[in-house]
Length: 194
Image 1: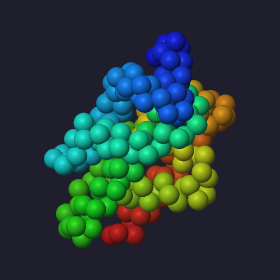
Image 2: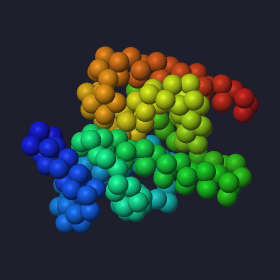
Image 3: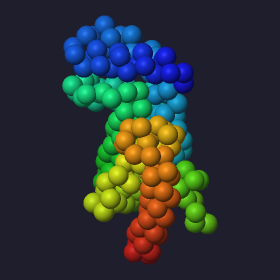
């Protein structure tokens, strides 16, 4: 994305925060395409036949964002990082509801990003992933944020570094360590289930 468009998005986000509803009308078409790609990436990790479609995920995201308009938006990357977190919550909430409805009967596995998975069986349950991320947040909040921004949000190392106000090298290191920690945690969860 070019810097001019990124700057314009930042200005529109800040105007929206100040209460300019016209800014939201201008912002929506500019971010919709990226949000659609982000939602498609998130939905690509869901099981086949998932009841929530990409457009519905974006609609739910917009509903949640309308409650968050008072956020002091730093920039475009900050906006998309928050969107990634919200999408994760939406999908996890739905997975938890589905799981409690089924009470564990035939729960489908959710494919993880290949970059995150290093085991011979590249799948894990989204709820288990969310639980593992919550545990990681207790140990190291920044590493959890890196995973959410990179894995769910598709942000680059540089964009993630910008949002977190750390160096790209720190993000790359956190990413590597978080992937290893999550793989160990998910493996332990899986072995506890058997």
